[in-house]
Image (cartoon, rainbow, N blue to C red):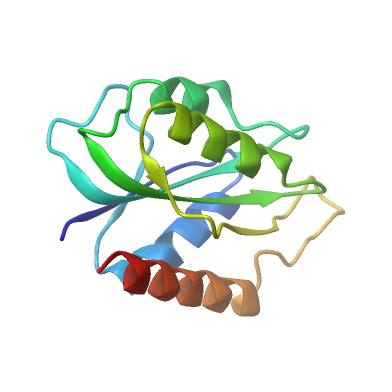
Length: 141
């Protein structure tokens, strides 16, 4: 089974979560590419930082290039300052593309500006992302 972890991160918060997911999945994280995957993947972990309640347009546009022939399964993760509703939106977009989306998602606070959530994601949240990944991988094997 092959796995891929892609993310979009303006501040580095989501990148930290993506790297924790990679350790559990045994793969490398990469920034969301400009174009579609060439090789099909069995499991795609896709994440974004959530800004003003939304995922970045780059992430949404990337999801719209995918389909069930390229991505068999997907799991969504993200970091946020306040709300995590963009995670739900990403799941909906993936499903609309004919991709099997894991029900469980992962979200945690991320450092937001200079004052809010300054110590996030913290060690406990990184460990939780690692455990989330293990649970997801067990479901698809």
